[in-house]
Amino acid sequence: MRTRSTLYSQRYGCHQEVVFHFLQYHTSLGGLGDSFYEYLLKAWLMSDKTDTEARKTYDDAIEAIERHLIRKSNGGLTFIGEWKNGHLERKMGHLACFAGGMFALGADGSPDDKAGHYLQLGAEIAHTCHESYDRTVLKLGPEAFKFDGGLEAVAVRQNEKYYILRPEVIETYWYMWRFTHDPKYRQWGWEAAKVKQNFDSDFIVPSCSR
Image (tube, rainbow, N blue to C red; front, side, top):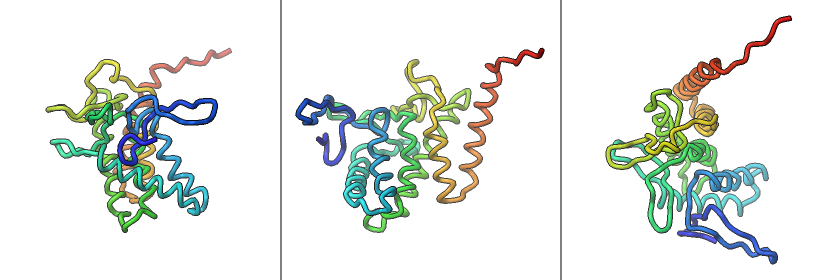
């Protein structure tokens, strides 16, 4: 079931006898993989913190993610890469930006008194995702951004240079604000909202008066 330590592959198949098998060796906190880790944590919370199996599975997975997927760029930005066929791709998807909020949400109850560590990790991911917005011309984050050579937190391919109202970055800002009350997270959220509002106004169809 696992690709490396307690990292989980993104896609699996199911035979009639309900035996699961993985279809690819690709692990990320982006599309097809993000909700799994998030729901482990939320299953524990929704059980009033009695579902210890969900919590342990989450803790083990986060430890493996930090060991194998999380890196720091030459410019000091913490990012979450993707494990593909035996190597780490230094690319982070917009969807993976939810992880900043997840780390903050899961800080309380983490093993070995690492609550402060995971709250800080959440802050670092939030900062990186904010940079992915701030480094674009439109100030809206791309679908994916890379950390190769001199490129940091920027989209490289044309098929990554688009924005489709994904909420993950704003979600992380919200969690970080709730746990730290640092006003910068409210400011970052407001900046994104204003940019979006400006672009939305270009597409508003005026109502017809009678």
